[in-house]
Image 1 (cartoon, helix red, strand yellow):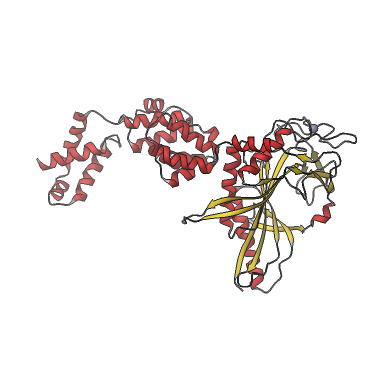
Image 2: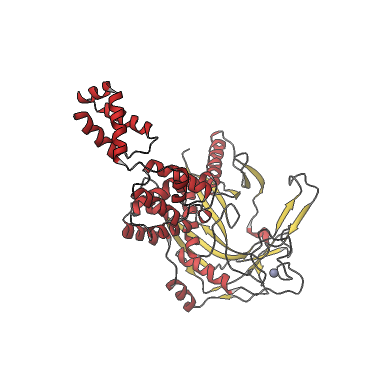
Length: 482
Ligand SMILES: [Zn+2]
């Protein structure tokens, strides 16, 4: 049987409102003492009543509109019942049969293809987050767990796609673009490693000939962009192997183990009826008037797609550069700041996509914390334009800037790594090299171009790379012809 990969995603994004979804507790809980960001509402104490934070609704409508969803003008909250100590109420307030946004889509571009793929968005709904359990040691053997309810009631939007992905790579491309969109909308910081964006996936294999659907397996706990592709690919390969061996695939939930690079079985998959959904009696139906939707639509911030097109048009950079520079809001902002201070937009994009991104990845630094600010990068490029440092020196200077946070001019001053601009001094060195290498000079005069490179290399060696290569080339040519 020839199989086709079928993947659908469910993504939770943490909405960046100041207050929680149904109470006035602050959402700023990271690093806080456990259980200090709580109140009777988010602790689910008897008699407390939830009140919807209007900002949460606005952020969720913004997200739905940006994902081309139809907004249900009347939607409802439901109770999703489950019993686990991270949820003191024993139910989560979520949306069930009438979510806020439905029938949307997002287009993604595939590598080495001009074709765009439309990924359908099934729904966008609002819900509250649960608390966090801290287990003593390994969860299986721990003798106790601690409950921290600071995260209870943090607002989430859940985005569910149709099973439209045909490979792990497509799913990853989608996620990167979705992150950039929610960042540009200002509704979520998109930090997957810190849990403000979480992804679960459904994976099955379909018979390519008959279209017969396979058994779905759900993968949970994928917590980095790198892990997405690895986890999904692992699961696709695992299922293919099982089928090839004539084994059955179990419908289950599996967990991605980042340390071992495998998925492991967690539990058999629960069905919707296991949650005993029923309408939340403490909240009125959620009404969104047309005026609000239109207002949000009109004032929607520029999305990555539009920004990419504007970068190509305004800064005359290739499509590839624009795609990378708009892949995150912060990177796009960095570029725009730099380009407002420096006119050569392509040189800037080269440095950002090359050295800057490389060092950020290597040192695991977020761009907003980059020791090399746009101003500092531009300062270095200007030294290059003035001929004070060469392109090669600039790479060393950049590394020092990144490691020390100092200005380029300060680094150049301290280490004395300027180009030799005194031409008389350079000519003297050229004379010396020519006199010391009569064989190379002869070779060059007999038409061996390579000999010239050797002579230039010798000058560079004497000057420790501080000579201007163009000038040296010309000077040697002149001198050898004499
Ligand atoms: Zn609260």
